[in-house]
Image (tube, rainbow, N blue to C red; front, side, top):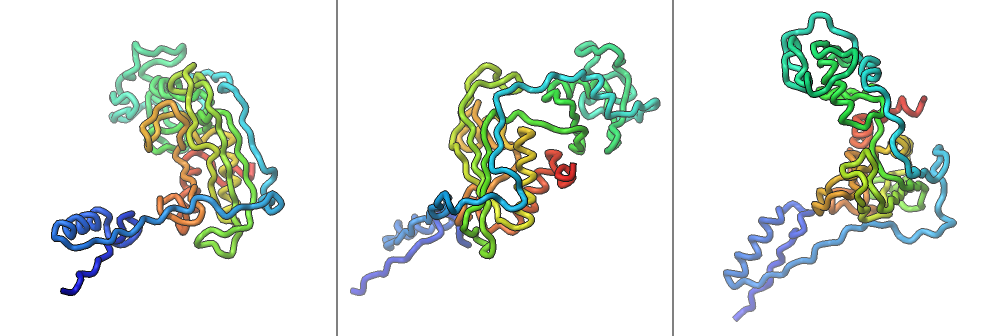
Length: 309
């Protein structure tokens, strides 16, 4: 009797055109039918470049320095909430009969924070319009929103996310290094690679964090990230440096991966942590990545205009 050949069942890792659940079910059914199955081993992601000697590591052209540090510090002294709100709004004498999307009361009535929050000089029925976007809210509601944030002198419209002032975050102290290595990323064979190394140690949460005075963890540091060394890649690096200085790259929260709370997590600015493959979605090639991260930086108030200041 001729031997039945083993049939390979591939793509169990989800990197090919066959959905991993379908491939897995195929394997189970073949086993149940007595057919031999040859399972292919899932490829491993290439997280790091080949070894690089210190003499091969160079500064990034057009970018000053190779390192940024943030020291242990609390937020700057809080600014008067009423003054901040008044700086960015225009009073509305006759507000429209529509909802204030902060308290969900009508703008023609008093703020839902009446009796809960009081500020000298701000009556609960006062309504203001934000200067750039034109969205309207009770002034008392804007004060309440400001008091619930970083109190850094900036406001962010809750409707359209327009930023007024300079937005800062709650990133804990750490170090950001950046340099050039003589290897190319997939999809950028004509360019060298910018390597960014973030390092944040464990510490104690400050007053701006979820649980002040409690220890926070910092898993997976130092974290290595990669950009192509071309004009757009260097622009992204410069903007990431601004975001780092404003404490916007990381924050303290709950990990989406492990569910651990009170730990350092990414803060809505995606990075590529996979050097030579894209099995996890955090690598290259990814032709849209640079444009996507520029849009994410813009959403945090970090734009090309920042570099001209």
